Amino acid sequence: MAGLFSALATDAVPFRNPCGHPTLPVDDVDGEWLQRIWEGLDPAQLWDVHAHLIGTGDSGSGCWIAPSLSQWWHPVEFARKRAILNGACVDPNAIDAKEIDRAYVRRLVQLADAFPPGARWLLFAFDEAFDATGERRPDWTTFHVPDGYARAIAGERPDRFGWVASIHPCRSDALERLDRAIAGGALAMKWLPSSMAIDLRDARLRPFYDRLANARLPLIVHCGEEHAVPGAGRQDLGNPLLLREPLRHGVRVIAAHCASLGLALDLDLPRPRPAQAFDLFARLMDEAEWRELLLGDVSALFQFNRRPEVWRTVLRRQDWHGRLLHGSDYPLPGVIPLVRLPQLVRAGVLEEAHVAPLGALRNHHPLMFDLALKRLARWQGDALGVSIFATARHFAPPRPALPPEPRAPEQ
Ligand SMILES: [Zn+2]
Image (tube, rainbow, N blue to C red; front, side):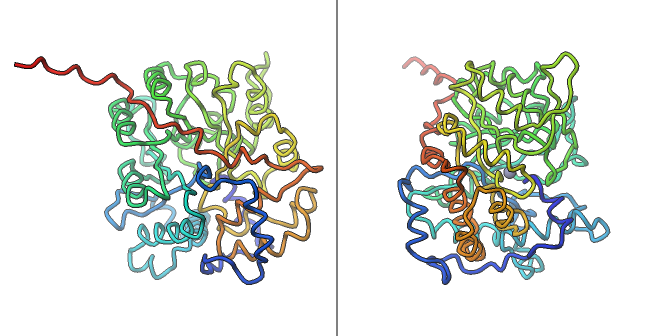
């Protein structure tokens, strides 16, 4: 959810999502044009591997949003929450009626059902921050989505949703929770180290890594700078080079957003200097030992705060495409200022002719817009390969983490 902070500081772009009905086709969007988006794609393989659940807990879900996001005297946080809820088309009436949790899910289901059968979304839980002593830190927590809620919502519509657990590894019961998540069909584990205060190098994380590796459960890690979820504010923990630690333990890692935002210290230098986080991710992608383990998701990549160099590199590096996964970072594709189509045209990665239909599509169906944009982006003829949109294959049904209990001898 990176980039929201700076997007809201600019008022020169249209702001509100008009939240049109997602039923397709949409006026102003030519059916043939839309058909092209689907050429070569198998909807049954199209799993969006990066979608957020958000709630206030008004349905008893246990979800939580930091109080500062609801207080007008914290204007930036207040605007950020409103922008996210508008991006998710949660209307102000639902806010007044304390119906935010359900309204959020309702819109997401509507959007999902406008896709061909088979397409699915991985819904993220989001754990609280804990400090190094294992103490819960609500003061560092921006929002919280319990595993049980993500699992329950996915369970309501298994044809459309799977769920991703989020467990802070410094919880005293982290391993038991992990076993429960695996037994409960979690498809991946999600961490945001800078916000949740997770140091990937901490030796105490090793049993957690071993369990993830054994269960072949991918670890989705937000790397690079993160502004939308400040949390613990430890940007240094989002350094992509720290991913070598879980990789060394055999964990399959998905670097969220390909670490495409901001700077991180190049810790490989004798005297570490700031480098583009994306360049450090690229270095890891090119290290032979992680070829089978390191993946990246392409969510949020085309947001205005990424460098054209990032767009061009991801389009050009066809050799990476088998290891890149489609993701939307929902609800952010519905937050209008975050993707600026004229800027993409100027950078040479989008044809002018696509701007009007993409804009019209976004007003009705931000998820279809996000997919269409990724399918249409080009750099000197190179496009994102169809393998990027065939993500289901990366999520083999997880094996049980532990061998089954030996059966008691019969009497
Ligand atoms: Zn995200």
